[in-house]
Length: 365
Image (cartoon, rainbow, N blue to C red; front, side):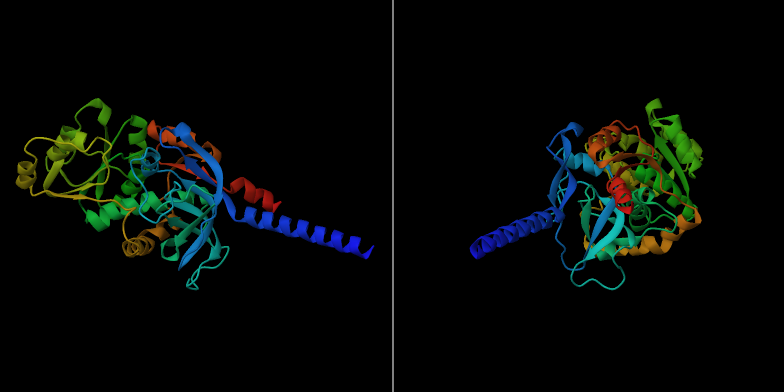
């Protein structure tokens, strides 16, 4: 009889240990966007391991993330993540601090509401990020709005201030003026005391940019915009161009840029090939052309960028002087539809991905 009890006890103990192991393994998993190279239909959600924390890294429980052009390019196999970074899509996230890695300072604590610029991994339930890149979500702002800030606002801020060196009184031409970066750039130009002109693909998109502070806008689908821009600047041209298009806009950009203008190239949606007397035209106007990206920049550079942005801009979200523009939201399981919408250029502002919203509400109940 004693032997039977011992056997039963051992069996129960084994079952409990197995159940604990299963639960522990489950606790270390998360839902995340995955893809096979190709179209939006190749996106799906699967269970993967949660990221392990390195030195001075913080684990965020993601409430909302967003998609960017870079995500659609990565999905197609055209824009891989930097070495050592997550291959999960998503360059920004908003949520709460879940845990702190070794060496973290005392600036952040578990439960803090934060948003962060990422090199990847945002389209998932949890993401690891250097604590230096965390920003506190402005008071009164929800996670969906916050998820629309890090990538596009820091990109626009970098383009205008770190690269373009915009000055008060100057005029900036912003291509894609109703995109995520475009709507942020329009507002940042106004904050800098400068004037913006935009190009966009519909009158509704132009109207949105004007409502945010753009002085004028021109529909690129209606032909050459360069003469209209020159007329709008009394023939002087623009001091700065924020160009996400590239090759197909070369001639028009060259026509509208002012002498000593700064041309900031950050995308090639219109291709990368140009021909003709390119150098002669650049020399004649003393134009500075700078190509720039953000994702592959060093942590030191990104830390400076985030710090400068927090000092110069973040408080304006609280006052209402600037605002993130959210076009629509999709649940994580519908991320393929979100990518399709972006590639069809239907959005004005950001497309946000809801991640833990519904699960968090259930937990609160």
